[in-house]
Every structure is written in C-alpha cells, then in structure tokens.
Length: 205
Image (cartoon, one colour):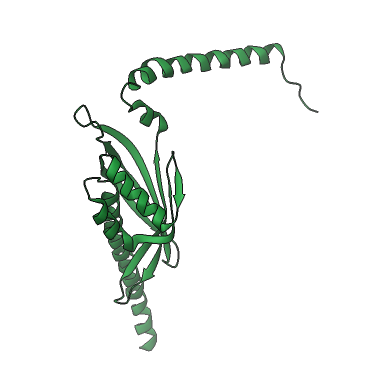
C-alpha cells in the first residue's frame, strides 16, 4: 500500500509544480505588461512613473536602444522621466512572452508591439514596430510573493523606420535615397562580378 501511495502521489506533485509554474508566469506577464504600458505611455506623469517603477528597478539596471545606452538606477529613472517630459507616444502590445531559467531565479521577457509616435499628432501618428527585451531576477518578499527586478531593458526598432518618421525627411529617404542606394549597390555588385570573371581567384592546392 505504501508503494502504491507513493506512485499515485507522483503525478499530483508534477501537476502541482506545473500549475505553480503557469501561475508564476501569468503573474509575471501581468507585471511586465503593466511595466511596459507605464514606460511607453507618456501621458503617465513622470513622478507617478518613478514611484510605480521603483520596485522593479535593480541597482545595476541598464537601458539600451539604437541611439544610446546608460546604466544605474538613478540614470534609468531620469531617462524614463525625460522621455515622458519631452516626447509623446504610447504602445500597443502584440505579444508578450516570459521565459524563466531553471531554478526560477532569473528570466527574460520578450515584447513585440507598436510604439505610436505622437510628437506631431496634429499632423499624423507614426506606428513604429518595436521589440523590447527585459532581463530580470526574482526576489521573494516577506509575504511570499515574488518581485521581479529588471537588470537590462533593451529597446529595438528599425533605424530606417525612425529616419523615415522625421518630418521633411520621409519623402527624400523613401523616394530618393533608398532607390538610389539600391541602384548603387546593384551596380557595385555587377562591377565586382565582372572583375571576378576577368580575374578568377586562384584555387589553393
């Protein structure tokens, strides 16, 4: 009877662990959805942003995007507030995925979405496809809950798309520069093809 009892308990233990994993991931998904919408909705006042983000920021937090990088909790806080003071945008989340490392002490969040640039909203709103990556660790709080601490926040988007969004540059970039660059690249490719045909590389023996 003892052996049978142990055997029958094993599936329940595994099932409980899986339920626990799913519950933790669901909790983290909700937390990082909240963080993303706080960071990327510039209608949130800077002081409120800092207060609500404070529990999520690790001391060594680093922000990276195609234009800049900066590290440290205070630098990150000032940068986030600066975005909310100077720029106008919000964010539509398309997908959000949490990945936990073995041991469930660290993880990674991938966010796919659209940053709606509204700096010139009287003229247009520019939808910029954006990918976000958060690398985090988990700390246990006194009440048994988990608190994610963000160590890396990376923002990725197409530099070409960003250039095309600049008023007055869009027409030149899309109608002149990109077609001209394409023609120039193909001409250079043909030049090297002909040169290689005339002077084939020697085959090493």
